[in-house]
Amino acid sequence: MPKLAKPLNFKLSTSTICYSLIAFSMSLIVMFTTFSLYKTNQSLKFVKNQQFTQASQAAHMAQPLPKLLSAITLRQSDTIKSWVTTLEIVESLPALETIINDISSNFFSSEQGNNSFIDLETELSVIQDKLTKLQTSTDSSLLLSNLNVTTKLHSLIKYNDQLLTILENINGGPHTILVLLQNTDEIRSSGGFMGSYARIDFDNGKIANITIQDIYEPDGQFAGYVDAPPGAKEYLSGGEGLRLPDSNWHPDFPTSAKIIASYFAFGNERKIDSIAAVNVDMIEKIIKVTGEIYLPDYGVTVTADNLTALARADRNSFFAGSKQKVNFLSILFDHLKIRLANLDRNQQMQLLEQLFISLEHKEIQLFSWHQPLQEIFDEYNFAGEIEYRDQSDFYLYLVESNVGINKANKKISREVDFSLGVNRTDIEIIFNNDDSESLLDYINYQRIILDPNVTVKEIQYDNQQIEFYKDTITNSTGQTFKQVGFLLPLESGQTKKLTVILNHPQICLNESCRIQIQNQSGLPLTPYKITFMDQTKNIILEKDEIIKFKTN
Image 1: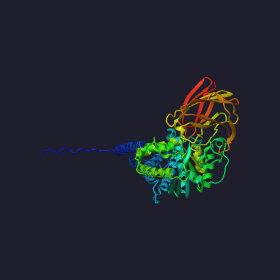
Image 2: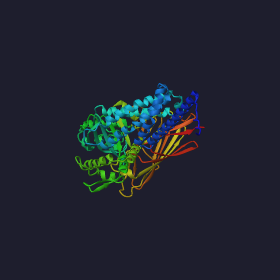
Image 3: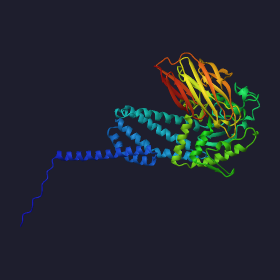
Image 4: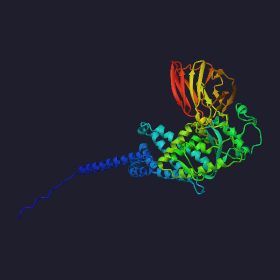
């Protein structure tokens, strides 16, 4: 018989087996770590692209390993704890997105079962707890603290906390917001003539009622007399004192808001918690996002370009009790609600972007009697407050008010040439009335708000010296300002120059010189040429600015 081959005899030592198992385990760990890191990175990319469902799925797949590592290390590793918490937050985003979509769809719903604001507050509270834990882990982690994420995380927590404060005030019982609709074609100090308003009543986070009304309705309920302030008294009141339609005369919006609310109280519009002044420009931007709106009842298509022409009533032929404008706005609002409820993701983001731009540019100004809310509005400059931030700065706020009772401002432009010296400052403004169609004259009561220590040496208009009024005003926090006012008529087709010469104590004695310029709500983009010594800067003013120059 042939001999059988001897079987191979493998003898593996214990150490070899251990090494093999360790190598295999390490390869698995590397593989799972690579997979978890890949899915984590993928989830964050999905978040950046606002693909929250995909982000949640990727975060869910990435979680097993960091959770296992967290357990193995007895939750002592701050870096791993941060990893786990981040994935948990990302995984919860679809629930938050669903609530936001519900708000978008049901915000203006007449149904009373909508709890979206309360749900949003609940979900944000959960996320806030996770963000706080993440902050604690990040602050303690040497790795993450070196990645410069701490500051951004602190900001995110702060913003989320402030959003929760807003929601708590809306959800915590009845809350009424008065929305003033301001027409910037007839400029006033807070943005425009208040032709109409909306009252939005919240009840525990739900909209209980929305009414749109003409400003003359509550104004007609007021039988008293309030002396009008300078400027309004001579050129606007007609001897009847200050009335509700003109009560946004004070350049400090929080001050104006309190005055406006007192008139509404006289007109039986009481228990107002917050006030929002919204310029027609913001409504036009909303229509640009939603697209044009056809109103079959009127047989017209409303666009961003024709909104003001269709909505406004001719105040020369206006009579108290007319419902024409209110009916038009109510029907437009009903159609707008439907459009807003059906915005796609891209349109929602466009609308959100326009909202923040409008807040920054004072197309929306906010005031509340609830102190936590007002503190948030003040912090982000949403309150429309005149504010002298640094006493060492040169402060300037140019305020126009159309007292001609017309819509001339659509065709008015201006350019400002500002020359700052150590003791003297010259301001030149070129006004142009380019109205060749309606031939509307612009009657502007111009005000200049300044530091109280500044004195007016001379004012010329069209190369002629003019008289001016000056007094002292305060903002809602008690800061004092000098107010200088005078009348500037500008016929259609005319261009005229205003020259103002100011004297002041020595400024700009430090290494740098700063000029604080506040932008009036409702004015279009305005070119400014600013000169200090041999330095010149050109800006387009669309929001409050601080301009810096070197002094040496």
